[in-house]
Length: 287
Image 1 (cartoon, rainbow, N blue to C red):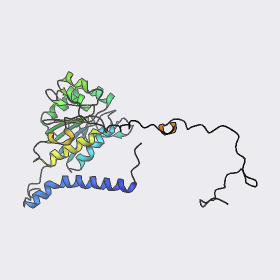
Image 2: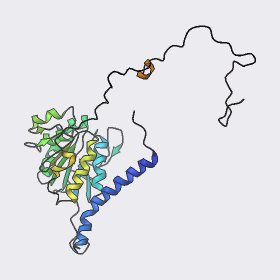
Image 3: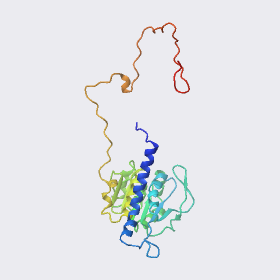
């Protein structure tokens, strides 16, 4: 069992992670200031904001949306939650999410097109001609076409993964070849401008990877990121047992404790009490 992390250490780790992410996102602006480039300021041709469209739909997995959305929002761009209308949709945990744009109102040119997962919800979308037509149209022009979990099945149904390597939730990713994709058993897979993530927690690595690609365009290739490695994740091997050593008792192996020796119970000395010592409120033992 893993030992719990002390509150002080947890706070230090969270602060360190937030500082590292903030430094990464602020690096382009700092570089521009160092070179005297003021084009990002108002009145001097402000830098084009990152335009993101995230599909929301009934029975989607809320964490698939919120994880990547956390990193997308740190880029301070245009965030569009898109659905057929603005009526709140019910997520897998019962929490409603309302769209901020309809399919018709969503901008045509996007930097990021994103589809979260949702087992029953994703299956329904794969037969929804209106949604698939929207994805095919926006995906043809988007800078990055992305998904997490079963969202890649929806992209595949829209024809956006033909000829691309991709991944999905572990128990459905073998369906991707039926839609023209090459399945890869990795946590995050990058193939040109298609970026797909595996299960729910992969959405965090996925979000960081896209933030790097957007905010650091000079990076030679985002496929060299440690999150898009082609090597499988490996668990730490179990400790080896030392040969020739046996436990002193079965209790050390998790079994029942040894039985007490049989025989008559020894009688206490004359004048002694059979009752155990009485504990006092301050932690001591009464004499």
